[in-house]
Amino acid sequence: MTVETNLKVTEQDVRSFSASKSEPEEFTNLRVQALAAAEVLPLPKPDKTKITSWNFTEFPVHSTESSTYSSLTELPEEVKSLVDLEQKNLYIQHNNTPAYASLSDDLKAKGVILTDIFTAIRDHADLVGKYFMKDAVKAEEHKLTALHAALLNGGVFLYVPKNVVVEEPVQVIFIHDDENASLFNHALVVADTSSQVTYVETYISTVPHANGLANIVSEVIAEDNAQVTYGAVDVLAEGFTTYVNRRGVAKRDSRIEWALGMMNDSDTISENTTFLIGDNSVGDTKTVVVGRGSQKQNFTTKVIHWGKNSDGQILKHGVMKDSASAIFNGIGKIEHGATKANAEQESRVLMLSPKARGDANPILLIDEDDVTAGHAASVGRVDPLQLFYLMSRGISKQEAERLVIHGFLAPVVRVLPIEGVKKQLTEVIERKVR
Image (cartoon, rainbow, N blue to C red; front, side, top):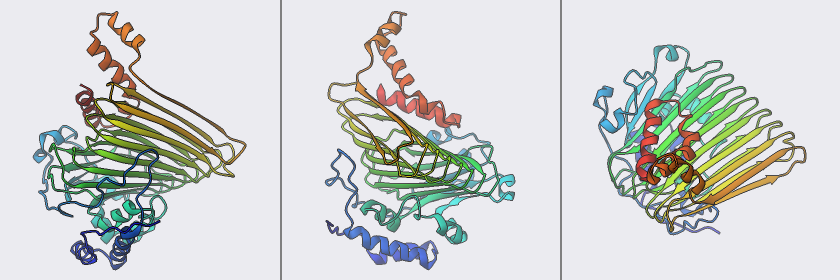
């Protein structure tokens, strides 16, 4: 069944925006087709969360112009603390404006590309066209992916050529400080054969409230024998309706690792999927979430195995307080033919308040015999024995609870490779559970 939606953005609006970015005709046509599809495609149906009354289509303006930065010293203090001022490999977007980009001469000489998505679409059309919404995410999947393709207004492109190992992390920061701005951002990360890279992105709102939408898609492509570590910390303001879709495609002997800190104050639908299409491919996902106030959130993590001897790991830890609620869906799917595959998952939720709600749903879908799989899930309060042990050593109850929560969320915090981002996530957790 399809439900028509009357969007305020017209085909002419989309064409005009595309022309203003000097996009090739092929990309303009992709936008126009996606806009038409968004009118009739249904919303996604996240398990146990009804989103038909959520606002995914109305927003004040499609794109805003914001200031750029000629030096990192010009950054707002909240952002400056995230970066090492000597950081060479860095991209910053200010609301919808590409604001700062830097890449070391060594990486440029090796053919690494780090640029805003619009420059990539213009200057690297063949490379972007090969991967953009082709294998990981498709525009026609549902209304939100179609809207994303039609209204794309920001994002980043990172390409690592064959046999290139990027030793230092590549850092990307999306600054939101205009309450009317909407974020239709697309991150495309491609690691070519036998390459390695660590990519760390941060979404940070420096205003307390938002009137816009966040429709964010990331695609990670790991070609044969490539390794990608993808870290993210999302701290978007209350008022957004947030849809986040991060997916990866892992080919033969490749590895994709995710470390995701989901700290938004907005209602959020999040999907993180890794397609293990190559033999001996690995997908490892670690996610931590803190919900507070009256937030409603749904987090679906999937690892889908096609490759023989593929290995998929899912670890999700969530903390809910006040009257916040969250659904944690974990899906390990082993397709027929994926012999010797291994699918493991663990989902655990701590509830700090009587009205807080958390639901952990581990699911295994197995279409092959010669495999291994397992899952674990728990939902409950802070362990009183842990509190008792700490308090017996002279620690107050409040401090003991804080230590237990930090230990519970440590799996993601400790693997983030950039100290400023690690510190930020720790501070956000501290603020949200206080």
